[in-house]
Image (cartoon, rainbow, N blue to C red; front, side, top):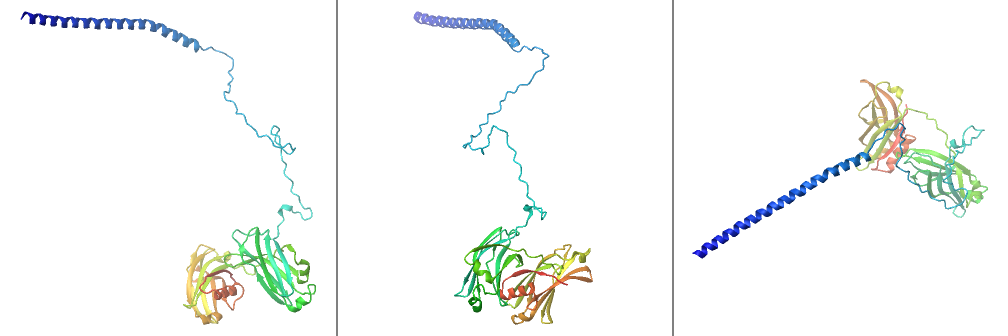
Length: 394
């Protein structure tokens, strides 16, 4: 029992002594840290004072009455210029000042009073001529045309006409898209009479005409230029490429300025129907329209002098270049086509009861000009739409 009490007393004293030791060590560490912080606080004011003084001396401002000149801190980049590869005097020195090029003066023809730059370029045609005596044929090869001035998208061709003893032989090239320079490379062949060939080139009596045409999508042809030469000159021109400036056509005076009407025709043989599309009008006389514009087209189908059918298009108001695009089907047997005709008349309804005629046109085998040509194209191309402009007359 005495032994257990001694043991318990020893353990208690050991625990108390350990606790006292730990408390002493913690107090000692806390005192050391407090002393270190106090020494640091004593040194910081000196450093702060030194930094403030240094800043004041660095940013000291002095007053001055002298004007301050701004100084550029950027430098212009250096430009590396290419060195000339040749020592010819034509090479321009980059260090020298640029030379001024004076424009070349326009040379003026004093006799005509027009400058050379304003002269009109005539279309030029390149062709070659060859006479084959054995086959009694004249071959003309159309090579190309130059200096052709037309609207964009126009097409054209070259036609040839040989006249011998009042007899005419016609031929033409294919239709091509026109530009400033057009290449054909096609030949025109004309059969000549035996008497004409046997007489020799110098004794041939006849004339050759070559004409350059332009045509639009509605088969309206315009002559751009033509040239003529005698058959007697074929011997001099043989086996050589000829280049000739075409003569510009004279401005044809229009006998009637009533306007134009665009039509499209087609014939359906199986149904015995004539299709007429009244498309549009242009160039109508504005003085007859006055203030009220109310346009329509009247169609009259006739067989000889008998009227078979009459129809009217719808009315278009307030448009002098009216557009209808209206199709009409007319019953017409095929056997009546040769002696039938179609008359179209443009009317303006000035008042509800007054229809003022502005012009008319006639189509058929009895007509002339575009009226005859359009009707023939319709007969030669059944079931196909063919469009063409027609001049209106009183």
